Image (tube, one colour):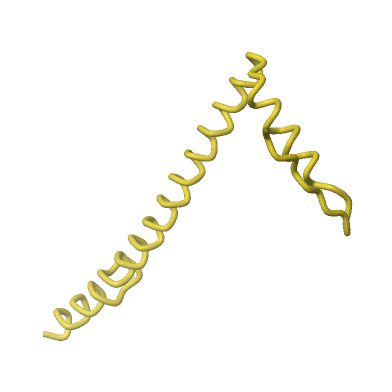
Length: 83
């Protein structure tokens, strides 16, 4: 009977028990979400890189606009309105 209680408690609370498995499963879910996010960021970067290699003028204009709008500290950039 004592062996049954020992192994039964180890099955639930042991380092490879049900509670540890649930904790590992939760960590795995978080890591899978991070992996998914990193994959989408990588796909975006690969797409933008392919556009730059082809010389896409829209991308060049977008990059130039964002870089030019980032001025020095205490500077304000006012975008031109398109007519």
